[in-house]
Image (cartoon, rainbow, N blue to C red; front, top):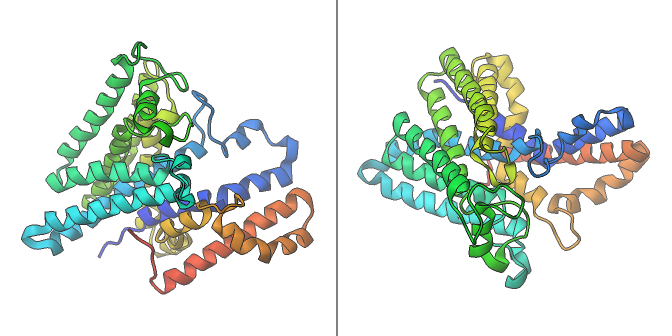
Length: 374
């Protein structure tokens, strides 16, 4: 039976970067190159400023949303097989439960839910909640139809609708088509509906659910392409789709700027294009590359299969401002890192040891088939 390794491996790479891999690389550059490292290289480890050039770090969140969609056709195929006549009712319950849990976990990670002080909480401000939004939209579509044409139509409707709303709808005495930080339709809707629950950042969430849904559906269509065609035909199809998305983004940028903070349609096409190309590469390497490549995918799959646990460990922060995982490993490794090397080298060793210990924990759980899922 043909087994799909690429999706878990790609999710694992994304999570590995978020959980410390990007920090290890950046500290390595600082340690080895210092001021000789070009500024544009170091910028790839930071989010772009409003309207700035899209960076590698800006791709982390869209890739999570995209991968969620890519795994959905396989999960929904199992639901259809096991669910019998009433599979939609069972699937609807699973979807609703997952959406609620992801939303609550998002508040725990970034919305200060644990402080139990509503006046200091943020309601909607996290990647997990964006995933929940996109997943809900894509799930409704998949429950209604598994046809690619239907998914593509809804995906295009989401992108076109969001583009038209931002470009032409006036608000609060302002004309349509504004794309300024803190002064655009998406931010205005968040500010109006969330009130004091908003976190105050120039990121939008409510109206932007259309973009999250489009990205998830893009992933779903790509996952379905792999499930149906596999091999070189799937690789070539994904390659063509990815390049078309990038080309469409470049054309649309003349009308609508690429702004990741509010996920303009240009950003969705640009980020989605790179996500599709990455999935094509991983499918070629790990699904079509033979047993040797499957073994190379294993370290990434270990992380990808427990991505939610890794995210919570490294993103939930305590009163001291450090993550749960930092609180666990720092007392164990800070002395060793200091003895190993001074200055930037010590920071690199600390980040590397922390990442290796996290991978070791995930490997231990993977071997025992223990996974945190919602």
